[in-house]
Length: 303
View 1 (cartoon, rainbow, N blue to C red):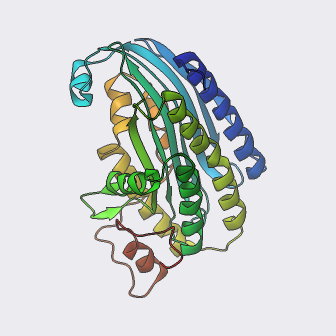
View 2: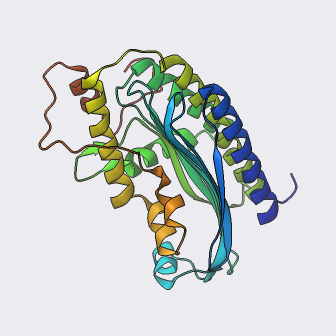
């Protein structure tokens, strides 16, 4: 396979943004993605696309960015990179549906290089159901495992564990959702080319629409009431906590003077923090909270 460069990668990410927006809007049946073009003062820019107050989706974002310039020294030190000029491009997605029966979903695929010559891919996809459906959780993880297994026998186990550890709200001692896969610093090696890494990232990116449009269709008509909406607000609050306290992408964007409105599009329009919440024993809420832990083998037939 031919070598890939930053321009080919960036162009593919633009096309991925187009594809996902088309698929999500079509499935929603009402919403339209509004686009805002922006420029970064230090170099580069992007396309922010937001869907709001639609049929199924209360708020969703599919963002593309391509930024470059001088990497702040504190970030270079944290990333342990020797070159201080950087180029980064990628697509970041978060969907917040109206219904507490439709899961929140996040995906990010990205490429990064520095002037010293280091270059790599990163990303991941994870699911945050308000109420965990074990069957849907298993299907979600099996789809991810199929993609991982096409590229390396160790990818799924390694990247699932990485997601379990990464999407963990330490101060709550619970995971953000049912995890998924997370990976970073996928560089070329003696046995795996950068093109091969890119092919893996492509397949992860294209899987998003297949997974989420199905979840939208399967769950959109499930009835719910005030108790479910209150629990949704609490679970959205946990999502906010993770993104503002732990998420590396949020920190990187703000530390490199990225556009705050685009970076924080991942936050839900409404959330809640009831004091000292305790679920009713035996309730669906308790069952979900009990499953917000690391190490659940969702892809297994027996959960």
